[in-house]
Length: 357
Image (tube, rainbow, N blue to C red; front, side):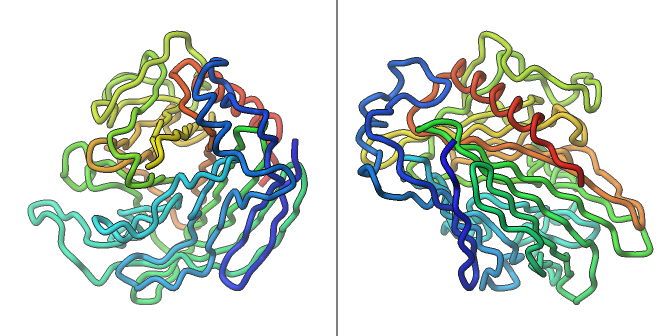
């Protein structure tokens, strides 16, 4: 694995890696012929570096957008950007970020809130996730970040303290792995309920969680999934590990929104016809694993493992909410089977390196 270097700037962290050799062309987990020419054309010259991620911990966003730390841009090892930031249709979408639209009566997603019988209304309830400090910044083959935050309502009340752990490592010359791990502690004297617009009455709009927004050119891209994603009301055993590499994986579009799956992927095309693939994995032990997913392709590119899609989750006073996800960013267009193999590999790496909270 190549070393990842963490550099702290005024408002962000930079995660940088040496550029991969041009000779490495096939995306990890993909058939040998997958996007070979595309990947070869994207790799920077030998001896250079690629900033894989910019993690903005002190955003200068207006309160309306529920300011919070985010990853944008995220890049492949070949240097292609796979995130959007403040798109005109939803300016509160920020690359890859932990975004919750229903936190009691508060909104930590941004923009208007959905209210049963009223639709979307703009309320004085846009909260803020505030960066407090980094307790750990370690570069190396597996880079580590430990961050402390608090969650403040628009009125200034603290709802949660959060410890966020981020790790990043390269998989090969065409793919790398980002792991997002959060522990949120309710600091109020009452339970706080986490939900979504669907729990508030809007059908099939269960967004909320670790949300990825892809570039505009990814609109209309392919969503990748295991061969047996299940409908929202299908029975499941909570927190039971689910094999992410089931044979016969498939691809589709918006019809996969609201299905239950251990992972989903997305293949998008850049303006110059190169492609990149994102694979997000809902890790065993997460609430309601394997989770329901919020996924979009037709209006914009978006993926979000959504444990509160159609059922609220109550965090008691003083109690913790925990969740952990893996995200693989790869050069080239993976097919469904290649994405399944990459998800399985990421799961193995992630479970083998889990740290104690």
